[in-house]
Image (cartoon, rainbow, N blue to C red; front, side, top):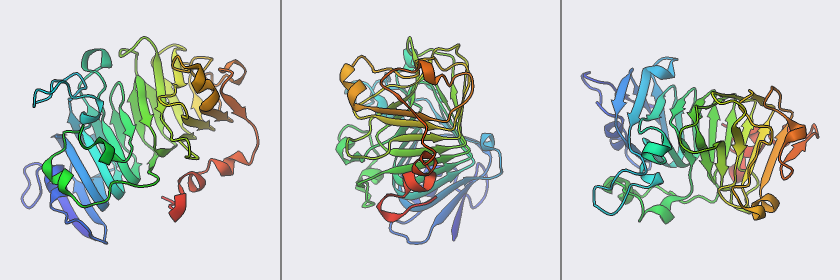
Length: 330
């Protein structure tokens, strides 16, 4: 395996992650590992690669921090309005087979009431995995994104990214998060991908962006079997029974919480329809075997479902949710 090092002020190392990524040729069949030494890296990074591994050195993800402060309300440098949500990401991933370990990604723009939406990660790569990472933000921290060719004209992408021949359109985009900490206040995990969160802490910050707080905003395509799945996660928060598990960004939103522990910041009704009665009929919001003071099955919104069949442990397993047509099992 080819190994590349990123470090500040070190001989024979790249000073930025972006430079290290650009040194990796497209089309390599062997995985390339980029090892990042401790430090704070103030940069936006655009990654359109295959077979890439990015590893923070050491077990503490807080020792390797990538951060930047673009928010949706920031004026575009070309004078054509504002950045908008999808130009704000600190790390932007496209391609396939990318693994990220032991790092922190933070958007420092601030709450949505000040900065607008502000992504830490835009995850548009298939078979993209995060292990022991911290994703920090406020509104729209993590976008588990869509095929981006339809977005190309709207995004301020560097020439090297737009010119790459690495495939970005996939029939199914799958993302995996294990032992991660993800925080925000409004819609801070959102998008259309099939995303599986295992043993993660999902932390709701004190609400600042909007009047109400929401963890998820799925936009699952109608034909897709799974959307956002949280398995054995711990939901923590700074609010008092005022946080919703989710609301539907699109009508066919699918979100499942399976054997999770929910602290008392989760409001009893749990789910909201975003002001669209139609979504109550079309979305699929399910819970199975959750526990904790925030798990209140008898008080949940009537358009959500509380499931009991023990076979759901297999149906909502990592292997089943993420396998897709190629049998991926991270």
